[in-house]
Image (tube, rainbow, N blue to C red; front, side, top):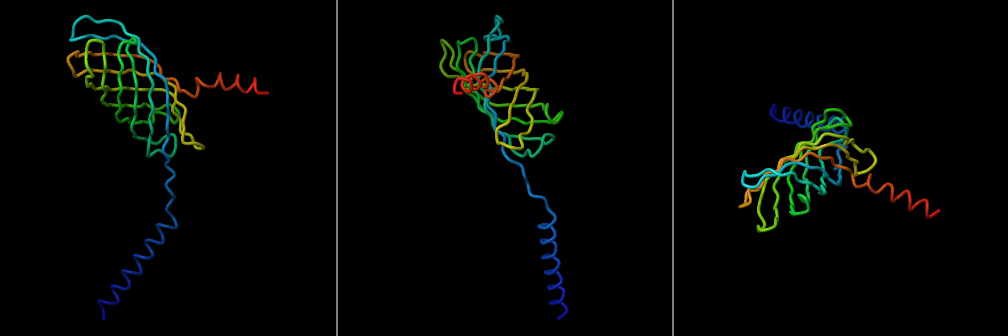
Length: 191
């Protein structure tokens, strides 16, 4: 008889605990935040550790960050990029990035990933890349898309026969910001 009473009390306490958590617990409001930007910059490159040369960098980068519900939360997510070095290579890559909130609207984003590079005289070759981004990347409470604008430094190293290594400094500009002038002109013409 005593064992049944203890079981009832345990069941009643478990139900109360579940009801308390459901009543008091705040809903998770974390939603994915996406961004697409153009990267432009310059740097230095070397082939097989030989001569160093200057290069022009242009590309596009898209990412989705998860686990963030306000500006001062950390986030993590995948990225994809397409890059060209001096319009001579085509590099397709992706990886993971981690947003570290320095301030609500100015985070530091660290990323690492892999890419495939096609360069003149070489077949498709694998490589690794790492990037450090600092700039505006605030949390958007009203949409899944958030604007980004900032500076980056990136290291890229080819693992194939070319063994190309690059150190790039540049800016990442949100594609939505680049589209604003065209949107304003379209709206002015439409009126």
